[in-house]
Image (cartoon, rainbow, N blue to C red; front, top):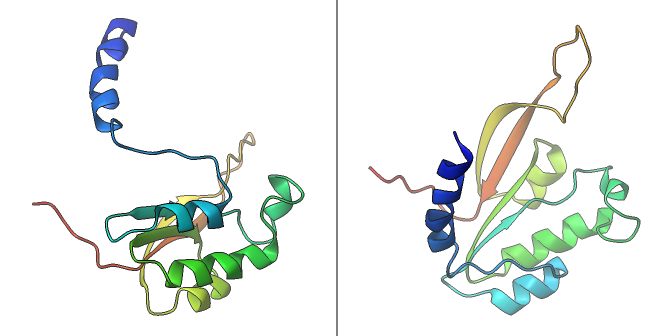
Length: 131
């Protein structure tokens, strides 16, 4: 792809994002502010026991529970992604769970294969297919 082709593609991206709102808010404030029957929240919280990686006080272990409680009470739709684990299976019990194999992290060692993991996507709605 050339530079010119990349620039030409920006119009399609701009059109798609015309009515999208991207915020940098505390998750609870964002969800409370924008929740409606027409809202879709995609949440990608820090992995369990790696919360400190992002910053000391931005998202702690207890926030996994708080986020789940908040998402169970919304009017809109929600998707949450995480590695497969028992805590999330419990927190999002009753939600649809979709799983797929993935490579873990950005592991780059010579002569070693990337570690594999199971990623999950929990949704509070049934998946719809466009055909």
